[in-house]
Image 1: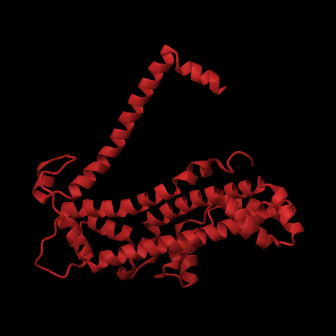
Image 2: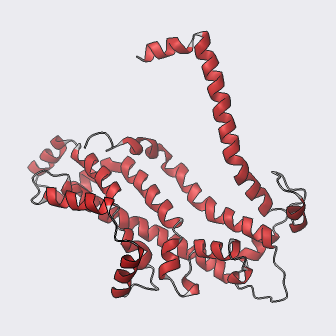
Image 3: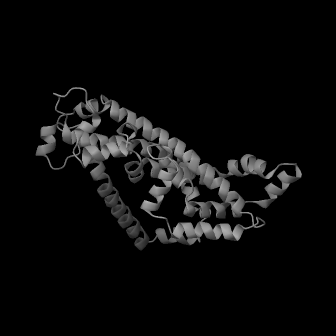
Length: 295
């Protein structure tokens, strides 16, 4: 099959298609990147230039005033630390609960397995909704705590099904050999299964981390104390509510660079989670397809 594809690409129609494909995908990439490049350039531009020029990629005058103002704010620095901490802990918690539930469900000899899988599928199709979830969080005493941002999403039903399918297709010979050597089910899981599951761990770690990092609704609902706000809430206050005072600058007479500050916060809120991807890239592409073929 690969030989026939290679032969097709060597024909004139094949080469024309390749050129057209490259041009089209290149244009799509440029259109996708342009808004982000403008945001980055605007974060380094002066306020008069932002008001005068509708779009640009290279600012006429570079200035770090917006970033200087942002990082001089204790509230903003604190929100970054909070967001990084919640994302790191939340990703570990969600990976732990999802994988430790998916592995037993992959065993066909598990008692009540069909019932549990049906409950997972039911939870995937029907959610409790915002108000019931809020009432549960309130009754558990998690309001104004960071656990309210982590525990409700500790297990994603859709991800659980995919990981279960991956474990279900896992080589049984390794597990049987480990049992002969006296390993327990927990020992097999931690010492054999997980080390061989790096692609799918990396994939869902990235999914969970991006979801927690970008989560805006949960902090808005459950965090009343502004000192516990995450980066997304600060971003909302500054960009949507146009409230620079959310950063609590110490100098009341200082006029902050309003537009540049909005763009700078968007850059800061976007870049960290993007920087994680290159470290997981080698596992990510493979992990996307794992567990999604067989049911």
